[in-house]
Length: 168
Length: 409
Image (cartoon, rainbow over all chains, first blue to last red; front, side, top):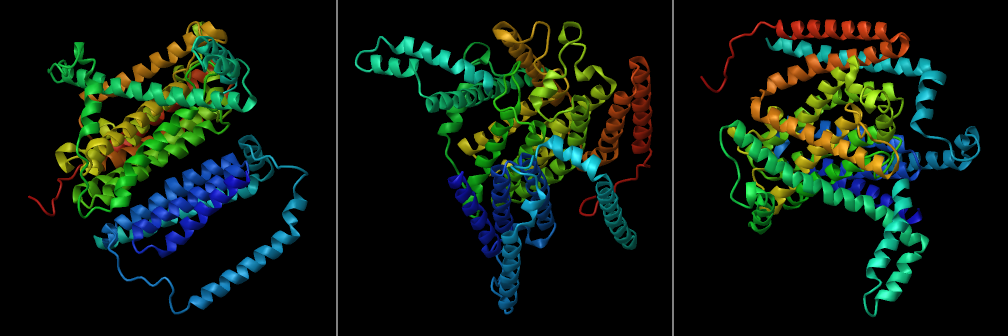
């Protein structure tokens, strides 16, 4: 378990670093996929097999493919290696944000309010339990999310349609 | 896995009996095998399903190519391969030797690393798919409780290989093929997953083994197959179309349309890398056929299938018979249907398949809550037929304009 954790962590970190330092845009996306795969492996290690499948399905199958598709619709489709500054002029702002977020996360995890909320032992993450929780305990938030996402979808279509009408 | 775990010690005993006569090493090896330590037993139990998947399904792939060439030949009024061995039976081996010994050419401007990685990634998800396909009663390499979801998650990764191959070749035809592949897979994934949701609702589980088990019983183990339900029949057709589009089989082979873009994403591949692309594509197609059989055609259920050694063998026979039937069906469709246009492909996916799969989910709900079976039959059939007529009318009612070409006349 320990070895698997370190290997997966190495994959995740290397993928993340490559994703921001590669010169070629498509290489960046492929590194991002490596990062997503590492995260999926971590879910599997935590016995959250449903989250693993969803991570692969949504992030690799949909998000990464969508990014690739978006790149293909631009002029950078051949992955021309333009000048890119990894460390821009305001690098200290990014570093500061990273440090603050890391500190916050550390403070939260140290007190561990989540562990107090959970029942003793490993929480069940099976599909059956998640399904029951979604349509029984959390029905209203679940439905609200569904309505919200549908509204966003319709909004995207309306915005795209306006452009089509304007072109004519 | 559990069943394999039970079989493994007996297999080892048999092996020790076979090896016992060997001089020098015979005695100690036989002693080790007849009383194996726990870790060795586990390793053998893990190795058996892996060896099964890695040996049987590529074999099926090799002879699928022969059957396909023969059948396509007959459909096109040709004879097909008949020079190597009787009826061309050794043709796949000859093809393999030829592909292995061919020169491997990489274009000078290609992205070397991604170009090399693409065929490797093309095979991995296709082989992983077989880990959740039950080939007999209780015989599945891994009985995941998220089996179907796992299969869909893994199969989406195959599109990455197509994109990487097409993009890294630095060839405009390859790139066009890659773009077409991504657009096609993204559109057809949605109706395919929604068609599977209907089956998951009816079986009450995501595990492939539980779905196959739910279709047992009835007259001769046949009448409870999901394909003999109104929603199952519709779902079977939706899923088969989606699976064919996902693995880019011929009516939907626009990513590698020979007459338009040479060979699409694998234009710049030769030798063994090309063979890997073919292997990945055919294995994915066979695995999808296996999942279709499991979800709609009763899986391993058939007359005589059941627990025990004899029942298990009969159930394996039924599974592989149905798998062969599905493979022949795809070849038949390939030989008789013309390739669809890109815009036809997209409008068909979003305007017919997607609404129909959502309607099908509602039909399963009705089927579940109407307790009296004859009424459920009539209501769900009427619901599905009416929606099908409405959707096909809506899709067909677009007035067809004369096409305007920007760069051609």
